[in-house]
Image (cartoon, rainbow, N blue to C red; front, top):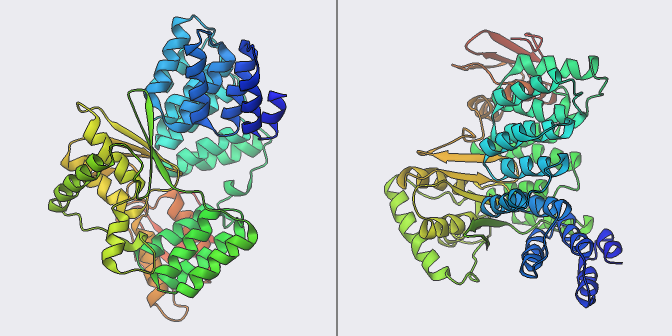
Length: 479
C-alpha cells in the first residue's frame, strides 16, 4: 500500500502508513525513499535515508539510486560525495543504473571532472550512460567534449537515442559548431532513422529562439517587438508559466499595469501556476534553502549584514543595481530593496560568510537567474576572488574573475537587429556588420526574423555576407 500511495503521488498518506508499520525491512525503506524521490520531495528522501542509517540498517543499491538522484536535483555535492563514499565503503555493485545516477549527480552538481571519472570506471556502459555524460557537457557549455564522447559512443557500437541527439545538438549550438551540428542533424535521419522533433529544426519558430529574441528586446528596451514575441511564446507553450511571467514583465516595464493584471487573470483561468523561486546552498552536509526576502534562516541577521558588506564592495567596483527585474507598481527605492532580497544573493552572502578557503561556491536556483543577480555575481567573483558556480533553470553559469561562462546571454547581432526593426521604416533591407563569425543560434534566429517580419537582412561577418530572406540564408546554412 505504501508503494500504491507513492505511485498516485500521495506521499503524505504513504509516510503515515510507513510510520505505523511496527517492523520495517529494507524493501519498505527503499519504497518510501524512492517514493519521495520520484515525487520530487528530494529533501524528504534524504531525511529518511539519514533516519535509516541511524537505525543501523544498511542501504542497498536501490536505495542509493534514489539518494544519489535526490542529491543531483538539490545540487548537494557534499552529500552526494558522502553517499558515493558510502557505496564504495560498503562494496556495493556499481551497476549501470547506479553508475549512471552518479554520473548525472556529479554533472548536475557542477563537478564534471568527477562525472567523467565515474563514467570511465564503469565496467560497462549503455546508450543512457553515454547520453547522461554528453548532456552534462552540454549543460556546462563544453561542446568539444560533448562531441568527443559522442564520437566515442558511436565507435563503441552504441546507437544514439533521440535524447542523445538533443544533448549533442544543444552542445553544438552553445559552442557555435555549425558544420558539425548540421552533420549530426543529417546523421540523425540518415543513419539512425530518428525523425527530428520540433526543436531540432532551425527552420521552425520554437520557444528557445523566440525567447532569445525577447531577451534581446528586453535589454534594448524594445517593448513593442518583445510583446509580440512574448505572445508567440505563450501560443507555443501555453502550459509554461515562465512565458506568462516574461510577457507580464514586458508590460510592467512599460507601466502597463492593467495588462499585467490581465496576464495574471489568464494564468488563473488556465490553471498555470508560477513556482516560487528559491536557491539552495549546501554546507557541512546540510542543504540551506533561501527564498526572496527570506527571514526564516536562523542566521538571517548575520546574512543581511554580510550582504550589506558585499554590496558596499561591489558598488565600489561599479555595481549600480538594475531594477528592471523588480517589476512591481512601487517606487524606485522600494524596487532596489526588492532586488537586494533575491534568494541567490542571500545564498551567496551566506556562502561567503560561512565557507572557508577559496573553494568554488556552488548554488542551485530553481528559476532563471535575473539580470541584476547575474551582474552582481560577476562582480562578487572579481572582488572576492572566488569562483561561483550557479545552476539555474536553463544551464550552469561559471563566474570567475568578473566574467561568466554564458557570455552574458545575448549576442550583439540580436541587439542590432532588434534596434534596426524598432527604428527603421518601410521594408528596406537591414544591413549590419559583425566583427566575428555569426554563431549558429544567431544565424537561425535571423532566418526566422526575416520570415516573420518579411524583411531582408544582410549580415557581414568575419567570413562572408549572409543574405537572409523569407526564412532562408544565401549561405545555404554552410559557412
